[in-house]
Picture (cartoon, rainbow, N blue to C red):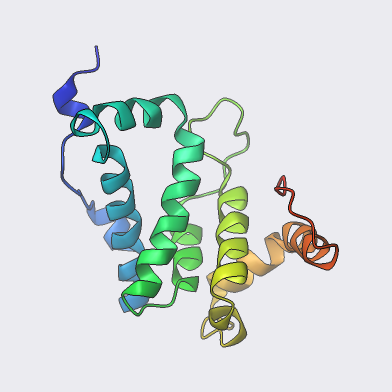
Length: 166
């Protein structure tokens, strides 16, 4: 049974496995922004966050995408490069084979969504990309070519439709 106390616990826990992947301040900011985003979203709202927490339990994939975008905003607001979130997730979240039976989105979908968000809201960071030679970013570019092509088509056609990333 889900108790009120477990759903609204207000703490951010950072496990050493996540921290070991961090190589610089931007990646540390990515890790913390992501964890803070998850924690804040789970306890804001009505009834001390209980209703919001139930929504998170019902739709975890949507919640995950919202948390990623909020983490990008937090990073930019704090003066960090949001492209580091792509690198951090690339390091810490291996690609699953299927997302239909998982509570999480495919990593490729998450990264494509983050890239689109940065592209539309903070394009400066992609134009002046300090991670262009980073092996994890290069891997992202290679594995996301189809998703980035979908984004380019959306931009060319001025479409407002949501892209269904692979």
